[in-house]
Length: 319
Image (cartoon, rainbow, N blue to C red; front, side, top):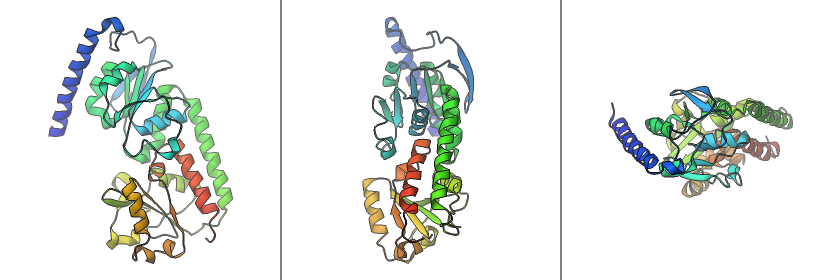
């Protein structure tokens, strides 16, 4: 057992004791605990086993930005969610987070969570160490993350938990309709052309590779990736340096930075003499994209990605 796991279980013990104490001190307020009647429920299989989820849950809490966005895309607004620094202000979520309580930056604030009295908690296996504690608060479903390449599977599980399968089918139909509209607008202008994706985060430059969220959208449209990026690598992230700059080469280059400093660096990178040797740079086919959108891992972000492709590729001067 690793030190990290031992620490995780130690924290679970402390949090579990705190929760039991809180429930004992506030029974007159009906603090959420297993003593509350759940009513009718249905079994949902997930990464950590199975959970009896209440029928038609109303008070939903999500424990990742991906899960939150999936719920919103299904027409459900959770009462609370954890977020990720630099992703909270993702442009594709503008105006969609009003009224949702913030439960912490990635790590859950259990005091706030208790006060929200959720019907169900949905998240990812990032929270596996505190799953027993979460389950004391409300029925909890944690999905196997596996990276943004699993974004479609995660949406299906969220839809099952929320009993929104019909909404999911409609959301997918809308997505593929937009894909077809973009394919028609592009026609065959990009046959044989490659689309390079480059992302800049603190201390690293990388490309999203085969199977990733952004790559899967490009493949749905029928757009090709450079051979160096059309590979399977761990976490779908292919890191490179200035010495291996050929990885970034393509007919079109889409590049984005995570933090404000990274966005400044993007501007510097595209002016670097080494980058000036890239085909896309020489042809003026370099487009700045939003990092959080293109790595969003959900249908709302996917819609914004399609918007970007309409903007940058349909109206490109020269292909």
